[in-house]
Length: 455
Image (tube, rainbow, N blue to C red):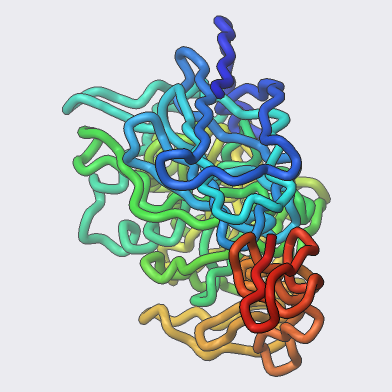
């Protein structure tokens, strides 16, 4: 079976006050029979979703439920990117945005030995309209988005500042894809994998679960070379969000130990204090905004430490260059190398919500942030940290089905261990030994006593 779509138009734009649009949503009707049936090894079923000219494909599963032991592999056309899904998917809900695969095609392969599950349905997909791999020749400049570039474009690739404190601080940020078609920046703020982004990027639990974070997406040279990524994770649980201060704090599903966390500073920076901003402007490779031709001394500084954002006095203002896609970038003090604001508005002046206003709202939820990337786990703070199997509703992507049960409800104990008491036993497939009809997926246990098998 093959699903294909051909659309010839595409568009993308930079919005200085919102996420960067990087793709278009396309409807599609693709799925298995229900139940999905058996097809294993050479008989595994495959599908291809292709969209000519797309820079990436991201599938949306409106329903996903595979039987125990069965799996669906998603891969890019060249096979260099692969992701495997089981049970009810990575969130355990049966509905999710799959991982992004680069190129104009996504391949699906269903390997089913059991075949008694519902199967899956795909109702739409995102097709990328902007490149996933930024390429610049030596001396070539990134195209400019004038709405938030204040004066001359002073942004530079992070590698231009290798070996500096600003370069090290930039390691804390990640490129953030939301749903099918939008991109922002997020910053890691605890060793346990909590991230901050803007409320206008993701403000709901479903929005957080649609997030894919891409780490170290940057060019190998100073404004030269092909950008690559080094690791990804997904959004897990929305921990706190606020529209006025325009922030969302969320946890993630898998380890981000390769990414250090950024210390937050519960302090309003002074007027004239030097600052810098790492991020992913235009959803491109990581860049640093340090220099400013509009500031005395040629460096970015705070022009106002109580300017109007979504409320009077809520923001820090500056002339640091930013673009659509920079939303959610941390604003670091060059004095302390700590985050003093969360960038969210462009327009020259550009501005970020004050961290001294955000921090009191989230401090009780934050895990520790250490230079070594370790830290002490805090049970029952909603964040699954090192040494914890779960924490609150954060089950680390596990479900009863992923643990080998047939179904039921998986929960977390007060000591942050998984509780399987409400999980139900998995049914047995055809040919398995049995002693009662209830043990078999078919409901039929036949044969002589001691030699009974499921039919």
